[in-house]
Image (tube, rainbow over the protein chains, first blue to last red):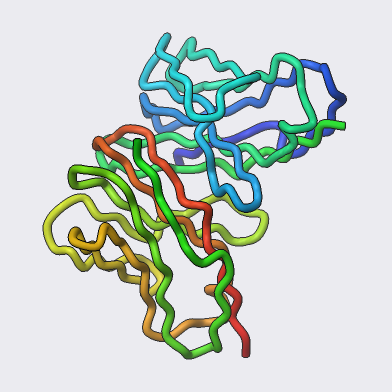
Length: 112
Length: 113
């Protein structure tokens, strides 16, 4: 079955370190998204991509970057982790046949 | 810019009682509307969606939602709640088919026996 996987599922890091969260989908979807989930804020869009070599900033993109070198992967990089980036991160892809988002299981990041 | 408001942060209902979760959106044209559910420690699962046509849409697990353009609302309903429905529910809106979604802050549903 096609799926979307995130790794690592849990990570603890220190302030100032670079962190990369991986996202891999096997649906061959062009559209992929990264959201962060924080209590009281729901899901907020960090970055998104509508295809290879395409990346776009979302509403909370400061301190984050993404790259899209193939259809399957959209890694999210925190250039210099800050405590404010402690959160649960969700990757999602969208099937254009259905117009709905399919989510990964989430990656819980703690920045100390 | 689009925005989504879920006015209720927490709702508690008794098992077997009816449920309505509110969602209001801000967008000029007809939006693409979604409801997702998140069980503790899990990802999000689609309950239902509205793109066009009949304004009352049926979803999984016995949920339904009604699009009311005049009220800019897309409220989620269920006639009889089960204990397994306890979860967090998110309303989301997209302005173009296939493009990014904006999510509300979520409503946490607690079911008491």
